[in-house]
Length: 165
Image 1 (spheres, one colour):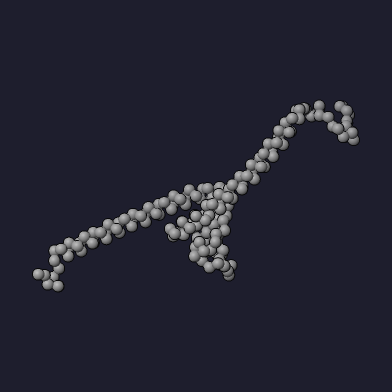
Image 2 (spheres, rainbow, N blue to C red):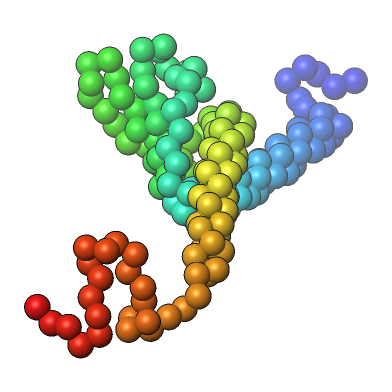
């Protein structure tokens, strides 16, 4: 029987196995952290192209970044977060500097808001383009004429060819 102070081969093997498990878990956590950084960079770069093109800013509720209610947060088209404190001092934080949880929370809130803004913008532009198309169609119905053949209907402006004042 082994005494309490002397480790057995079995307990040593368990300790070595535990250390191997710890190393394996640490490597997997490290790999996930590297992947997280790459995914967030890719997301940031792709999303920034879209948001910069659309030029929308989004007011974010302060609780999304666990800040007091009296703090105002604006997500800009360049994906900067402008944090305005009650004393009117502000700080800027880049979107890709957020934690994983903050990134997830901000995206869950901001993406539907940006989609609604883009939809409204598209509908307004569509109406304006339709109006311009209708106007163009109406104007195309006017026969094209040279300036000499243009008939002025206002009698005070009518002049005969060759008349000069």
